[in-house]
Image 1 (spheres, each protein chain N blue to C red):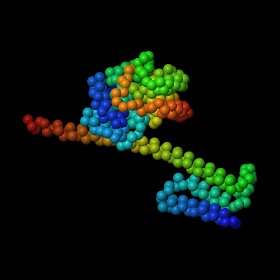
Image 2: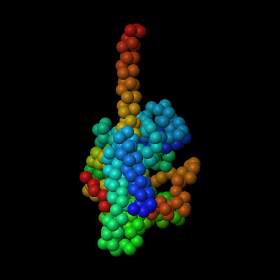
Image 3: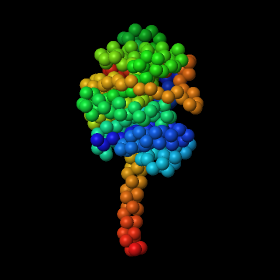
Image 4: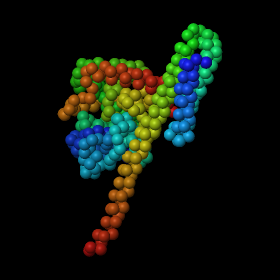
Length: 129
Length: 231
């Protein structure tokens, strides 16, 4: 096994460990980590086994095997960013709903307070007479 | 007829008192709801002291989110008709009656105040007019009825449309986009001729170079709306 392969395995392994550690500490939610784990695992397997990488690359018709690795990594990153866009869209929708709900509640509270204040003032008037 | 006038306002402390006075004079039976879209000036306080209802959004949502907040209020408080009326003073309160009339008669679900139904009624820069014409052409084709003023923010909606908007309201270019969504929901729309006042202060938010960019984005949004699922 050449030095480059070892380096690739070490880097990949580190990424996987960091992801797992982030999940363990609760800094990364499982649902957002699946793609990272999948990407890390696939890339780890492919960079660990040169034969497998060569075999698949030739199957697909790629002659320079490492570029296949780049392709896989690139596709995963594309998928992860797309996933983020979907997540952000959902969050911004929820954020909008919360802001609207907050404004509606504020108005309701203000109106409720005004009616109670008005009621408290009513009985005082006859006593003045 | 329980009527709510929704006034979206972003940094409109100067024009808001005039708008509220105009509404009170011309249509005293209506409730006025100012939606303060996270203004940085004293819009909320100004509205508060005028004694109208105020929806105070905690931060700027943009015209779509602000307008929808108003429709949510109309829906939750059982208003039969909701009127959108700009906070910058370009709409005339005396014309609200014209918008409501078809709703009361049951001939339309949403009535849009159009500047262009009467020729020569409104002037804008060449680029802006071209943009408006292109929107109108595309929208008229899509909707199957003539739309002359697709960007008008002066509209009146009945209960059906209030319920629809409370649930589904576009964020980015709500006037034009919502027409497509309403059409898909099989709600009936109608245009009524209105006059709009020229801007007294400030400039339109749309400049010449930006207007092309703006137009492209709105057209894209319209086509995306066409593909959207509507319940």
